Image (cartoon, rainbow, N blue to C red):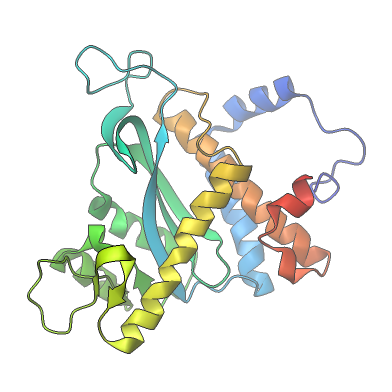
Amino acid sequence: MARACGFRRETPSHGLFTQFRHRLGKEGYQRVFNVLLKQLLDSGAVKGEVVALDSTAVKAYSQRSLDNKTGKSDCEARVGRGRRGFILGYKVHTACCASSEMPLAFTVEPCNRNDKCFIKPLLEKLKQQSISFKTVLADAQYDSAKARNTVREYGAEPVIPHRKTSRVRDALKVGKNFVVRGVKRLVNIFRKRVSIERVFSRAKEWLLLNHLRVRGLEQAFIHTCLSFAAMLVVALTAIRQHKPNLIRSIKYYAT
């Protein structure tokens, strides 16, 4: 991977990377991510026809303040619902390609912000990257008429299950033990939503996404961008080595 990045001998020191991190800034890292993604799109390894949306919570590098809403040393972090109760941190809202399991767009916000607020910003980022998505997958957390209409405004089909209490006939629903019920075609498409869970799993297990050691919203964004950019670099390395079956194998290049 080091050779693919242009390093012929040793990689730069950690201190040099830290200086470069502050000098490049949030917009610079976003451009790096966009350039890497464009190369993958041009190669055909990533298409983005079916897109999965979701968010994952990342714990802040701070203790809670006395008001139990913000961080003591990170005033931009907020207390919000994570997978296992409430945490102080940020949420990484992400759109990924369901077939290649590559991140296509993301944004980082305080943990108390609702997921539905970021459907349009994510879809807008996909449009800016000229990604022609046809189907958008999301879980029941995104269940609302406004969310579905937003997806349709971009010319795509929303595949979002209704809540269990919904009375819509033949609606797509997720029941006990995560069994999906509804029209067979929609059920088969919705099963591809697991791709976004795999993206988060690889980013946390191998790329330190949940190991936040910086403070502030901008630094949390840069940290996330580095994790996702590393994922794209692995995919590009596999493509250039003519090993397309290894585009998701971070372990192969990291060990």
